[in-house]
Length: 303
Image 1 (cartoon, helix red, strand yellow):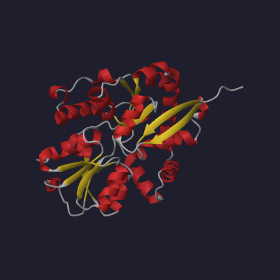
Image 2: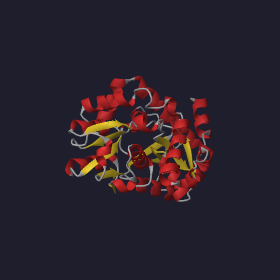
Image 3: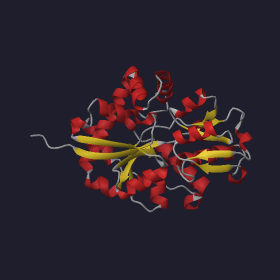
Image 4: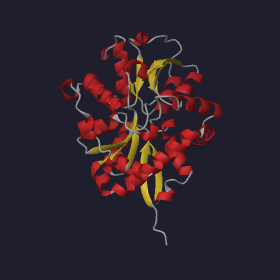
């Protein structure tokens, strides 16, 4: 008699970055490894971070700066165990905003005000001569909420958006002012992280989870038509939107091969936190203290 499946509770933001999970679910990659996946879409960064710390969730896939914030701002013992993607973030503005400098004195929307893509947004604005006092930063929540807010409130001048929301935004008449990485350089957005004690106590489960995730990613990248269908169904997208989002996501510099960790991108995340938030006295630390790639290495060796 087969052993009962082990439940693994995973928390993510809604978006194209979850393609490997969607594929692995549908193709039975988790079930084949004795895992029962419970997937939750978080409304904001606070809910994700607090839930992971409290043990409501076991594994998080989100902007890696959330892991750094958990460690440095909340004193939580996290471990980044796998990479993911560059985020495909773009600066999206109202139709009347034709350049980033035009955001002076305007309202700019972010998720949590002191982590992840908010810091990217602040840095892009700073590179165009705008300091924090030069615009109103407003915390709204996850990207779908920011898109909705911009559509309903034309005084919400700009935000940063990932996929598929940037595609939906442009189709709704909002405009793209540029790719985030074109301004700030390499960036590690989505990464997989856990509470370190949970990882140590569930190492075999975590290895099997990573194997299923990578298997889902490999198949998803190998079959574009399949992936477009999955994205359309799981994210409730028109197939043409899913197709456009998929094309952006699978272009060079998007999904990392086998979800390998982009070390240069992570170093830039730390550099941004040091520069924008003044963390560590303005000097970014080496990333080693946040990493434990032994689970990933074990997983790939056995695939």
